[in-house]
Image (cartoon, rainbow, N blue to C red; front, side):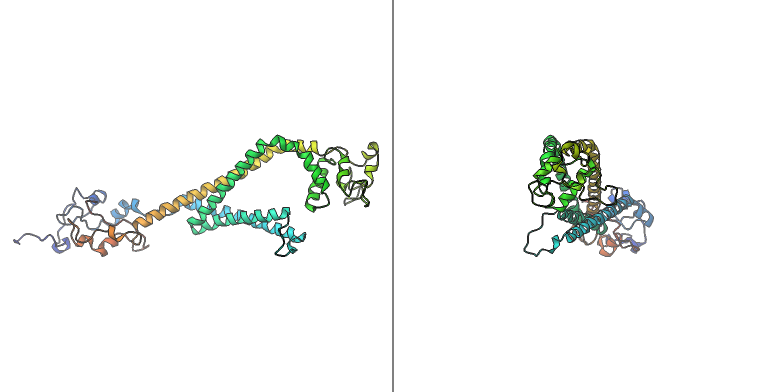
Length: 374
């Protein structure tokens, strides 16, 4: 080698000289002050610290920004509140079953046909779904968030189908009200929940029976042919003044009313049936019920949107981490020291990965250097 020539294998640290950056270098175009190796386009040394942090900002692994953090917090707290409501419904249902003795049956006995059982199952499902969303947002668990979003989507589909059926069958449902009331009258003493519901309907609407007060003849205990003490009587909820000036309901205010003529009976009980008033009540409250259901659907849609946004953020961050971290990068994708057009020093692992990690946080700041041909 002649005097004055410089070996291409020697680094610039050995010669102590600095060369102007190559125009064809892909790194020098985006990194001001980049110093390439001697005679090699794309074999660069380090950027100045300030310029490196500024130009490589787009290569940072995606993390939860301020907006994404707000989405996470909203998802967590809303589902935490809903999970508490679900647990409250579950506890209420279990308390109701315990009070009525429905929980005293053995393991081999079938489940009781009780409305409180529906409250228990609904509260259990509601709290489980809400806890999945709550923990998924808190732990940033994509699997739990997918389960939560899928459950909300399935619930929205079921609600849409139920709403469509109610709208399509609204007329037949109103026509079947009197038949439903007659069935409830026949089983008045069989179920305490049914008895409570029918009493509330008659008290609120100030009515008695399905079409008239004589419908109570269909009840086995109130029928005039019954040998019991309630024969030819009516429930206290049919009375015009069930309290009769007292503080509690007088259960005997309707005794013997079915034996009286209509003029005498109308001074003690309501003669009109509950079919027409109940139908009118449903029509007048249909708009309010629709508003409440719309609000519920809107809340569920908002929860689904929050979960979807959070899932998207987590997916983008995971993809960014897999593409930039040392563990997520395939070793085969890293250029070797023998790559054509690169000096061994330019691909020294210690120097290459020193560019990728911050000394303070240890997070990836840039992708590994690539060959000019890639």
